[in-house]
Amino acid sequence: MKITILTRPQFSSPRILAESLQMQLHENGNNAEILFDIDVLNRLVGYKNSKLSFHFWLSKKVIHWFSDRRVMQVLKQADAVVISECIPNAFWKSLYNVEKLKTILKKPVFIYEVYWLGNAPTQIETLQKNGDSSYERYDGHLFVSPVTEIRSTPSPNAFCLGLLAKTWNLKPLPKKELIALVDFAQPGYEAFREIQISQLTKAGIPFIALESSYTIEEIRNIYQQVSIFFVQFLEAFGLPILECLCTGAQVFTPNSGWPMSWRLDIEPKVHHTGILPNCFTVYDGERDLLKKLLVFKENFNPTKTPLQVYNEFIQTYPAFYEGDQLELKRCLEFIKSNKN
Image (cartoon, rainbow, N blue to C red; front, side, top):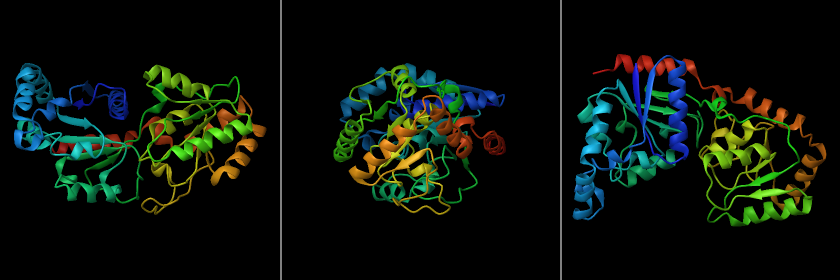
């Protein structure tokens, strides 16, 4: 079976997911190709829905006419097309004309994101208020985690594939020293970051504070060095969390509900606290953070600690590391049964 994946060229979440899916499909004996040309869907948007001036809209269509035609020819040769893009972007009518793509291709078109839209009721509400599409926009839904704001029973065309993080070459290697990683500042959450930095300083723990842009190689080299990673705000999933757990870094968070997709609750609630495994440390304010940092520092072993964190992660979330081949096979059977 041949699957073509459309995504962005930048090394962000959609591209990482696209490459993971490609490798999962290859492991399963299928042909998978990635096209970094998702903007072709933007140029399918009609002038009235585009929110662009007519001249700018028309110039984009003309400039990219030949390249867009070549992309469409490749897509037509696939058995199914997967769009790897963030939510809500993937559902905005003014950004991508998925409906027209389906009309042109006459074959299944899927969305691949870290979460299933059905597990994000606040996103559904926002999309509906804006007059945008919902589930029906795509023939199938692929996603990484079974939990986001809530955990619900997916529809028959939704498939929880996990990720193939084992291919990222991130390992729980022995550390030279205990180093913490403070993630990028997030608007409205600056106070949490300031607390993290101040308490790391008091605890005498060296840290790296992310401030600028990094290549994928640079940022993963940093992840490989650290043994503590701080969550900065409410995450739908948080790929940096996954990447750091692969290296054996303990994840510190001021709220057990911030890493939404990592909660283990049977019935998690929207934007509520939750149950997290031992590879996460939840702290409550400055004093509690300092106390838990000092305990972690005292017990830290440069060889054993990364392995302990990594093993807890692997045992709790195996599909995030190795993917879910059974679910992928179910997805491929669904495609075969729904080919036009």
